[in-house]
Image (cartoon, rainbow, N blue to C red; front, side, top):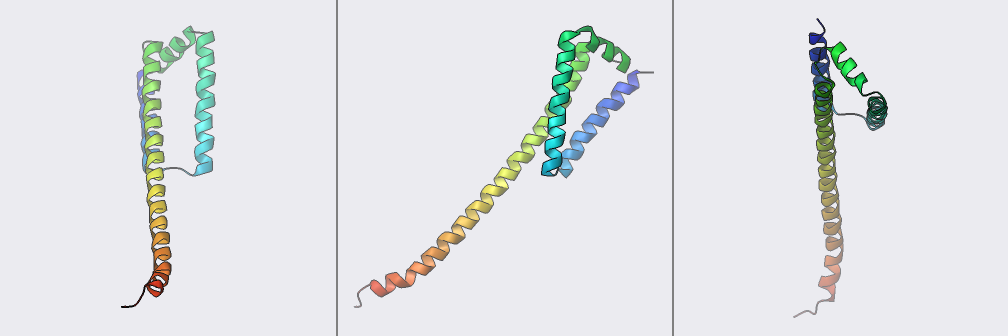
Length: 126
C-alpha cells in the first residue's frame, strides 16, 4: 500500500518541475523557493550523515526498498529542477543580450545620422 505513495510523490515532484518549466517564476518567489530547497537539502544531508539508517527508514515508509534508491530518485528530480532553472536563466540572458544589441545598434545609428550632416558640410565642394 505504501508503494503508490512514492510514485505519487515522484510524479508530483516531476509535475512541479514541469509546471515551473512552463510557467516560470517571479524573482522574489524564485529566490524564496530556491533558498528553501537549499536549506531543506542541507538539513536532510546533515540528518543522513548523522543517522545513516534514517534514509532507509524513510525509504521503507515510502515504499522504496533501499535508502540508496530513494536518494537516486531525489537526485534525479533535483537534477531536472536545476536543469529547468538553468535553461530558463540562459533564455533570459539571451533575451537581454538581444535587447542590449538592438539598443546599441539604434544608438549607433542615431549617432551616425547626427554626424552625417557635419561630414557633408566639411567636405570640399567640386
